[in-house]
Amino acid sequence: MSLLRTVKTVLWSFIGIRKRSGYEEDLGRANPFAIIAVALGLVALFVVGLIVLVNWVVKN
Image 1 (tube, rainbow, N blue to C red):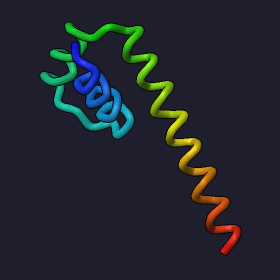
Image 2 (image 1 turned 180 degrees about the vertical axis):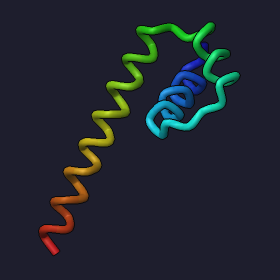
Image 3 (image 1 turned 90 degrees about the horizontal axis):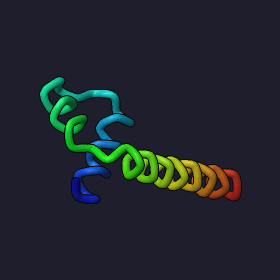
């Protein structure tokens, strides 16, 4: 499974909407360690983005 497809799979899971056929297709090909690594990276980016946004709003 390519990195882009893994990122796409993780982003779909963050949103929480997905067709069952797409989920089953990804489940068969997915590398669990790659999905966990990408998910942790995206969560870290999300948290850092929120911190930056809050600091920017509080400054203004």
